[in-house]
Amino acid sequence: MVDLKEYGWSEPVDESPFDLPDGWEGGRVVNTGGNIFCRIWRYPEYNIEVIYNAADPGIGVQVNNGIDGVEILDTLDTPTTDDADKQEVARKYIQEDFDLTEFEDTLDL
Image (cartoon, helix red, strand yellow):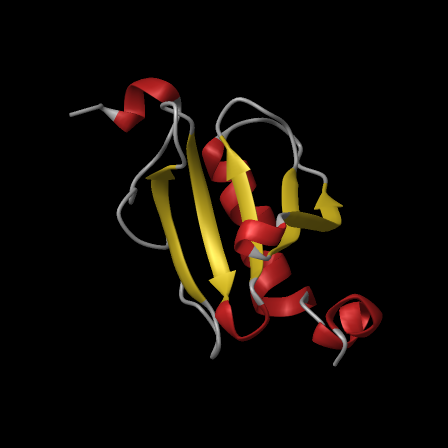
């Protein structure tokens, strides 16, 4: 088993590090394939994901349409590539700044 802390991930790795508002799920670190690990939160009603990996700066906000691919909606800047810093940016976005109407043209709301 991979020790995720050796790769820059902070606890908890098996659940969201913060409470999620209604409609959101996830937040654990997952292997997305090829030993690429990402922390992913989902708003499943519209297939929206907030996602990042430990190595790259920034956080992606995207629509994951499975076989039809991924459409990037937004990129959130992070002060560092540190997991704790990224967690705080993701927390603020999900808990305070997320506005579904911002994507109404993309999502056909």
